[in-house]
Amino acid sequence: MTVFLSVVGLRVIFITGLTNLLFGLLVLFSCRWVPLTRLTKGLQKSRIYMQYYRFHTCIWRLFWISVAIQRAVRHFVSGLPVLTR
Image (cartoon, rainbow, N blue to C red; front, side, top):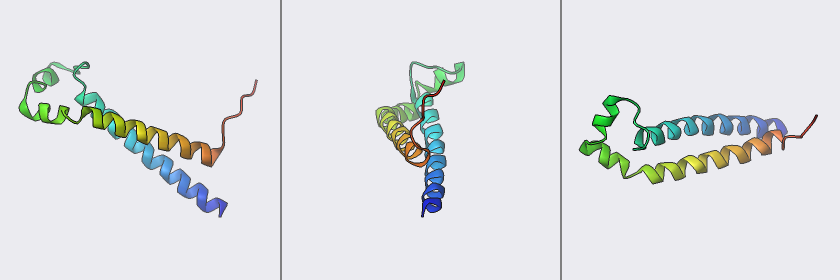
């Protein structure tokens, strides 16, 4: 049973890590304060980008939910970190 929980936990940690990366990139590209290049500065004025930007706060919330799930499962699988000298 413990092996099953650890394998499932590791899979959940891996999948939420990938979703963290995906949501992080989506937040980065939807953020108007971080123009990556001259190309994205021009894209920020387009109609498609403005429709995508409407979901910026929703993407942030999904990102933090994914981070919280990953952190909780990580602590459940590996235990709380022990402070040592």
